[in-house]
Length: 373
Ligand SMILES: *Cc1c(COP(=O)(O)O)cnc(C)c1O
Image (cartoon, rainbow, N blue to C red; front, side, top):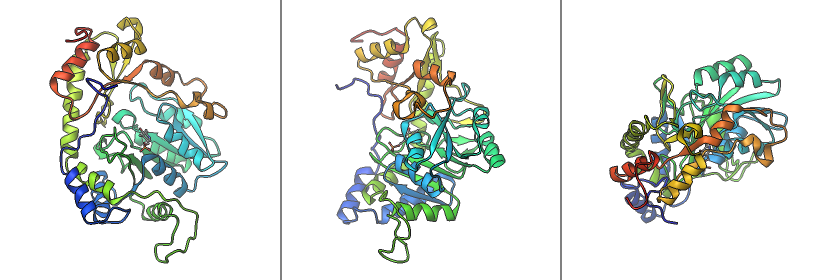
């Protein structure tokens, strides 16, 4: 199906094509080359860390982080249930157990008091997800981490450029992981990065990313590693994307502001909240549909928008209810997560969403527009 208004579309209007061609013409198309070095330096600067490591995608970035932090069988890692599956899968990849907790209705991110209550003698760390571009309450999570000697990893896959109390996401914890999947704020189609300012941790991440080969001795493998590298062609795209990050974020903020202004007074449509300490970035503008006030439920709204050519997406299904995770999950109730998963919907958000289409989308949600308007 081709949508009149798709959910997301990459913005490749800068130097993306030029740099990709440059990479191809230079014959540096593998995981080594000038764009890899430049991207890793540029991205560390964006995140305010000493280093950034390009990886094949966000999922393997999370896996690498777990492996480099020494997480293994018998360990527990506390994660929100309301997130993309990769957050939990990364914990399982290393043989550990994710323990699912609820999210805070004021941030839609992992609830610090629920984290504190979930800590056991097996707990080794916390993964905080900056859901839909809103940072998690990191100071509260770091305090819990300090108290129990836990690592805190940011899953910043949906929050490039967001800030927490004026500090950039990516620099807030032990390490952070980003995704550059096709619908993310910064993209190379597939891609990811891990950031940290801990040189020892970065050395482990780098070793594990490159098959575990000793960087000083060819074909000597002190450990079992992975091939999780990112290519120079992908990094060419990412270098071009980062040149325009501020501009792309500004465009997304303008779109978000239009949605907020137009939907504020639509009863039953509840916008993503913002904590006063958060400088969120609109990844996908997200709302919750209160059926009793709006008249119809989330799924029916999505069907109606689809009938008008508008693509939307439901919120994630709580991971603790999915088949691989129903046993062993501590979070049986998770009332906020459960309600959000039922009521939440992501709306079209991308740089190329022009004023006319945006106006059409908000009028359809406000039920002021019909087919063919
Ligand atoms: C997209 C995403 C990931 C995984 O990223 P990929 O690059 O698709 O592997 C991980 N966590 C969250 C919260 C995401 O949204």
